[in-house]
Amino acid sequence: MIAEPEVLNPQAEFVAERIATSPREPEAHAILLRSRTHMAAYARALEQRGIPCDTDFPEGLIDSQEVADIEAILRLALMPHDRDALAVAVGGPWGTPDPQDKRLLVTGLEGDPQTILSRTELGGVVAATSARAAAEGPASAVRALATDPRLTARYGRLPLARRRLANLMTLADEEQRAGRTLDLADFCQRLRDRRAYGIDEAEASGAALGGRGGVADQGDGARPGHLVTLVRGGLGGPR
Image (cartoon, rainbow, N blue to C red):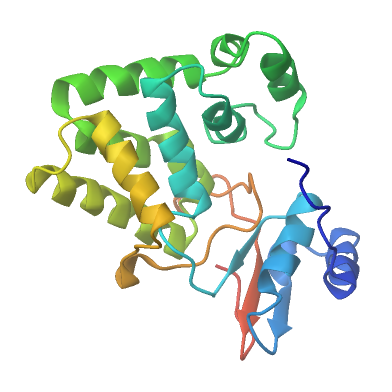
C-alpha cells in the first residue's frame, strides 16, 4: 500500500517559516485562526521545523502524543519486537536525546530492533514496566510511566497534557477496579478498542502537543517551556 503524499498548507508553511526565522522566542508568538479547520496543518508545519506548540482545540485522550508515548512502552513490554511501538518510543521521553534524529530508528528497523532498546533508556524502562505490570497490574505501570520525571519534563508545562495524563491514570484505575483489565495485554487491547470505535471521555479532551519533542518542565524554572500557542477566537498567552 502506497501512502498518499501529504498536501502542504501554503499559508501554514509561510507562517511557520516566519516563526522559525524570527529572533523572538517561540513562546512570544500566537497564531490566531478563524476556525479549527486548519489548526492541525499549522501544528504540523511548526513541528517539521522543530518548533513545539500547544493548541486550544480538543482531541481525544487516546490520540494525544503523551498517551501514545506511554502506550508504546506498554506495547513493548508485551512484545519487544513491536516495530510500530518502537517507532513511536524512540522519539519519546525515553528515546533518543533529539526526537528529530531518526538515524537510530532507521538503523534499528533495518537490522535488529533490539539495538534501539540497548542504545537508549528504553530497554530499562520497558523491563521495569513489564515487571511492575506483572506484579502490581497495568494501572500501577501506567501511573509509574505517567509520573516518570523524563515524561513530566517534556509535558509538565502543558496544562492540557497534564490533564490527559491524569485522566489516563484514572482510566487505568477504573478499568482495573471494574475487573475489565486483568493484565497488560487486556489494557492495551482496551486502548485499541477505544481508538477503533472513537470512544473517549469528554473530560479527557484537550489539545495534543503539536511540537514533537518540545522541551517543557513542571514549572520549577529549571527548563522553561518554549511553545507557540495556536488559538481560535482570540489571542492566547504562553502556557
